[in-house]
Image (cartoon, rainbow, N blue to C red):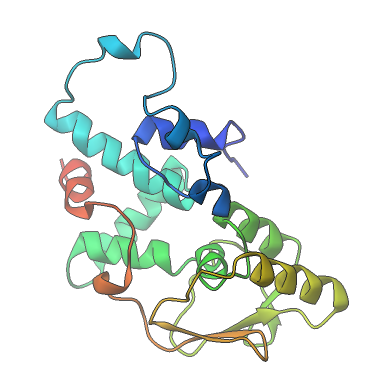
Length: 208
């Protein structure tokens, strides 16, 4: 499976804002955006104003990097969102938000989405009491996500929850800390998604 293996902070600097690719480090003074508020590479001072296409393209790159998605998978998600009823941009965000690795990040089972993918691929997570090792699994209303019932899995999840104390689960997920369960009570709406993305720009680009 293809994946990006380069510096994570370089991606944030290229988009000009925090994408929270390194978990809580992004909220500290060590964040690359705080230190270097300019794009990576040489001669950044010579770069001109973005065209309309450039603005749309950067928005598309931003959402891919935010959720850790590469181009082919993005195209598949977009086609799926286009076929669904309603607003294509909101449908696309809804699909991204329902990815299992993103859900683990939202409920503090993982410090970052990247770590969420690792936890899932290593078999530490179950959905409705069945092991799921696919990070792109899309949760649905009624799903119960919890760590596998063994010491290793439980210790990883408990450690992450303790490490990320200030992160609150969104309204569409009920987090039960006593039983280490995350219950998807409903599908997310646009108001539930706090991603700094202008999805309409992405739709305008992809519909050309």
